[in-house]
Length: 373
Image (cartoon, rainbow, N blue to C red):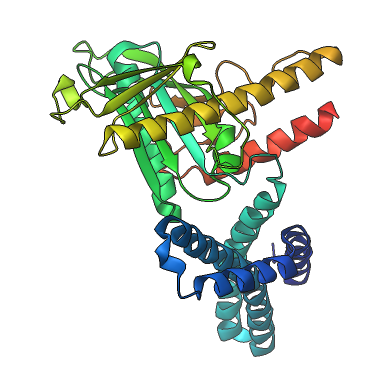
């Protein structure tokens, strides 16, 4: 069937119009001008932390602006390419139109990703993210699965050029991880990755079973927004218990000769945060406190939301215990059980190709929220 380029280009322009409205390009341009003025100040680097915040914010704002303006230009270029192909006619024209169709496919995907960004309007969606993965039922296979999931998310971030920072790693005895905590330091990381929170299930022939039996294992993924200095979460000192210990590597081997790792427990809630990847005890303590504050902030908001639902007579959970299955045997399939989005290529998924799952999860969450209103 011939592609209706006129309709396709019209649809792309309509979507980009809504993206520009939500993004508010004039406000973004004003922000860039302000940040450029700050970055040009001669005393900027007197305060290195503030300087890094300003330069990072400027880089992100420019990248966001260029993405939108660049997408508009790509649509213009596509229209010119289609016109050239139609005017050329014959085999040469057909080749040009084939090139235009390939570019149209890429543009649909790119514009779709921008459109999804406009759906991220939750209170904390624009924050950076803290991701914690914990091995669940399934023994050594579950620990191995936790490590596979960590690699999947880190590869996803790497594909997009997002900086990450592993904050704490607890290795399992035989293989894999008991748990790992890492940050994804880019705006909207929380909005994107929050739909990944929940229980993940892996079905495969266990590489750790000498009888080659099929094994089902589980891992839990928790995603919280990274706390900011402006957030009002104060934790009294008498509510925190701090233990220090030596950092350890695989198999329990010591990787640090000083007691620099920190385990912080919030006594009223029992929430425990461990940090061992910073260079000093003071840095690990600060990092642990920041993650603890993030978890308490999210818990507070969840309790308020649950109370509102209870008052409204609706207390059903939005998320099931198991949100995604990764099946490697007897067939190859990754399926999200909320959105029904699936892929027959688990290798690509474990290599970080999860954008389609994230996008479908965000759209599903928006639909659920609208249905509840």
